Length: 544
Image 1 (tube, rainbow, N blue to C red):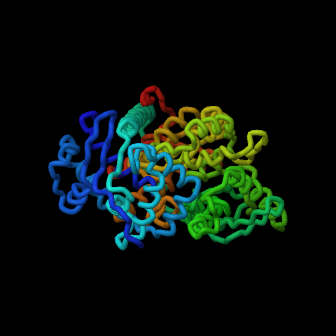
Image 2 (tube, rainbow, N blue to C red):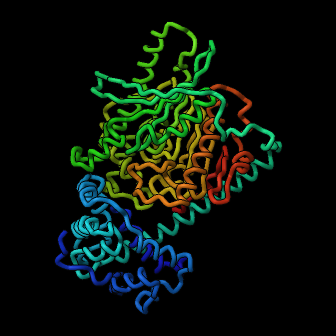
Image 3 (cartoon, rainbow, N blue to C red):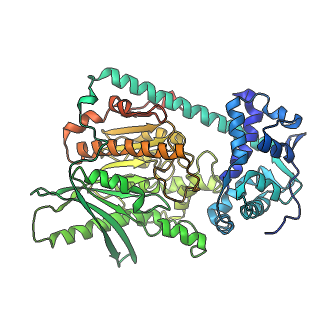
C-alpha cells in the first residue's frame, strides 16, 4: 500500500475537496504545490484537466500515478469528471453554517492559498463560484475558481491524513473479512436449514393495511409534528404489535414507506415519524436561509421526546376506542431508526449521553471534522448541551431496537451504549462515508452488553436505502445504485421482520431467519450480506 502513497495523496486531495461541499475569478489556480519540510514539488492543473478529458498521463502526472493500478486510475478519472448538480445558493448556505465553517477551517490547514495562510476563504470562494458554473460543481471547476495561481498543500499534514486514510481502508477491509469468518463459523456450528422450504419473508404478507396521517401537538414543548400510521386490517382480541420508525436527518416518513408497508402486511402497526427540527422541511428551510443551522443541539433531546410524547398521546387516544379489540400495543414497542434516527432509537432504549466526554473530545479537536468520520460533525453539535441537565431519554416501552447506520460512537461512547439491555441490531454499510462502518458500527457493536445483539453488514452498502432526495443525496442516482438500494431494502424487509417477530411478538418460528445461514441464503454477490451475533475487536482493532 505504501508504494501508492503518491496516488493516495492525490486521491485524498480530489475526494477531500468533494467532502467539503457569476463572475469570473480574479485568478485561477494554475498548479498544485506540495510542500514537505524543505522539499516542494508541483503539479500543473492542466495535467489533471488533460487526464480528465482524454485519459492522457503527461510527464508531470506520471510521477504520481506510476504505481497506481488500472482500477485506481479509473477511479481518479471518475472523480475528476464527477459533477454535482447543486445550486450556488445551497453551497453558500452550507459553508456559512457552523458545520460548513468547521469543514473549511480544518481543510484550510492543509489546502492553502499561501504557505502560511489557511485556505478557508479561498476554498469557500472556489466552491461557491464553481457551483455557479453551467456544468455544476466539479473538482476542476473548484480548481479553476481558487483565488490563487498556486494551491499549496501542507505536505506533512496531508501525508498524515493519507496514511490515516490508507489505514482506515485497510482496517475496514480487515473488519469485513473478520465478520465473514465469524459468519462462516456460526454457519458451521448450527444445524443446517433448507431455506427453500421455508416461507419467503422477503415477500409481502397476507394482511391488508390502511395508511393515515396523524398530527401531534405537544403544547408543553411547543412542538407539532406528523406521523404516518400503517395499520393492518386484523380482527383479533389481542392488541396489535407496534413499531415506530425514526428517519435520519433531512428525511421524512416517505423514506421508509417500503418498510412500513412490508411490516404491516405481516400484522404490525408501523408509525413513521417526521421530526420537525431535523426533517426534510428543516433542511429545505436551512438552504432557503430561514434557519441558520442545519440542526440545533436541542434536537438530540427533542427527537426522543417526540417518541415518548407520541406514545403517551396514542395511549390516551386508544382508550377512547369503544372496542377493546384491535388496539395498538403501546407497552411493548419496537423501534427502527436510521442514522440520527438510530441515535434516537438507541437513546430511548437506554443508551446514555456521555456529554462530558463528548465536549472534551470535540473541544480537543477544536470541532474539526474527522475526514474519516463525517458524522462527528453532527455528534459534536450535541456538545452544546448543558452537562448540568439530567436528560432522561430512556423509555421502558421500547423493547427492541433495529439501528440502521447509527451515529453513536462519540455521543454515547462505550459507557453509554453498554447501558442498553433490550435486543438490538446494528446495520452497517461497508461504503458508508457518513457514518463509517468501522468507527460507528463495527467497533461500537463490541461495546453492546445486551444479551441479544446482531450485526448486519452489507459489504458495499452506502448510507441511505431510498432513491428520494435527502440531506446526504446529490441526486445523481444511476442504475446500479438503484439496484443496490432495492437489494438493501429487500434485505432490511426480511431481517427487520424476523427480528421484530422474534423479540417483539416472541414468535420463535422466526428465530431461524436470524442467523448467518439465512443472510448467506438471500445475499447477492453484488451486495454481500452477513449477519453475526458476536465480534472480536482484536481481529480488526486500529493500531494506536
